[in-house]
Length: 358
Figure 1 (cartoon, one colour):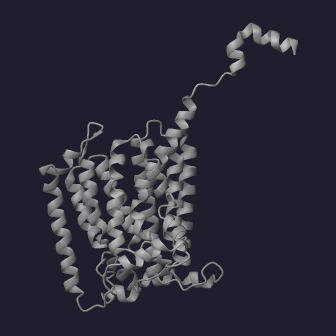
Figure 2 (figure 1 turned 45 degrees about the vertical axis):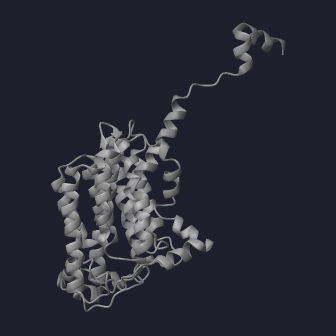
């Protein structure tokens, strides 16, 4: 692809990302009260996901941002709701996180693909999957300020693992991402699964290597200490931290909840699970074993019809989908053309005579 076409595609992707974030902020409802969150007074466990407090506090006290958002109020058609400085900062963070997640996902796809046929489609598919996962809801249509940053953190972690960066980078990312959302605990089994892939093959015994646990155990201890710390700091806050098993059992039993639950990752989760044998990359194939672990964790602590709880899986699912589709395309491209049976049996001369007789 020429450089000019690449630049045009990038511009289209950026515009599409801005439109997605615009819709995301306008069509969903914030479940977390921003002012309470900034002050450390919001309900737990939401308040414990405290990384985004820093930019929101800065936005709230910024006179420059307050003056910059004033023109938005003059365009009631495009901005029917009040635009606070915190919304502008959240929008900027979300655009950056989506672009980063898309870029890293594309890099993983390019490295895992033999032909890279579908490279231009990776980012659009990621946006579509995000739209279905974070916006396209009939009930529980909530947004949380830390959701898209969490998506970017997971995409970055997958990038570091896939390209075998030194574990210290993964550890540093894990520490920061844990302050954003506690689902980083699920990065630890992903780290172990990644360690099981050696020489292009999955060797399950290598999951339990002492070397891998020397990284995982300290990070798990940090995760536990951080959870204890935030629960101590915000012990006086109201809490919504309790198991959601009853809620999720009801959702699974009611057919009207199924379409929304299946929309997680753009309806591609089941597709990838069913077609997983078509994935030719051993690392991504091994990573798919994270799915049952993730589902079990969210079945207890998440709300399944809030499909945002599966959002961090989007980079993995998008890459897997691209590889499955590419495998099908390559199979068709390399399949020999079929020759009509009559011509094969009669030979060239007989075929010509038959046509003349007709």
